[in-house]
Image (cartoon, rainbow, N blue to C red):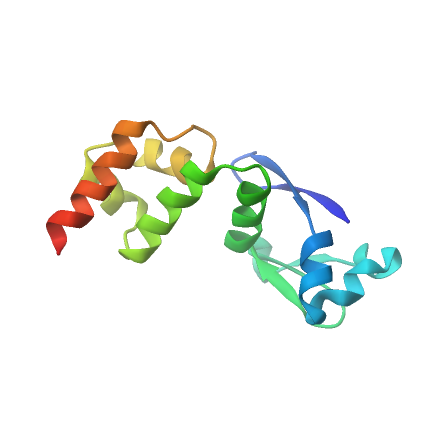
Length: 128
C-alpha cells in the first residue's frame, strides 16, 4: 500500500496508505491491491483519485510523506505558512529569505534550521 509520487520539480516522495485505510472507513477499499492500483492523477496533476471518487490533493500527500518520514521541522514550517495565509514570496519576505529557499523548506528538500524556526515564531509573535 505504498506509492512513490513525483512532483513537478522532480522531488520524489513515498507515501504509505496502510494506516489511513485502517483508520478511515472511507479509504478501506484501498486495502484491496487491485483497487489500490487503480489510483489516477487528476485535477491536472494536483490530486490522486480512486474509482470510488475518494482522493487526496497533492499538498495532503506531501504532508503524509513528511509525517511518515518524521520531518516535523518541515511540517511545522508548512503549518506556520498556511496558518498565516502566506504565499512563498510573502513567507520569504516575512523572515528574510529567498522565495526559492522557502519553497525548498516547504517541500522538505532542505531541513529547517533552528534559526528559521525561531524566526517564524518571532514573526508570528509580533503579529499578535
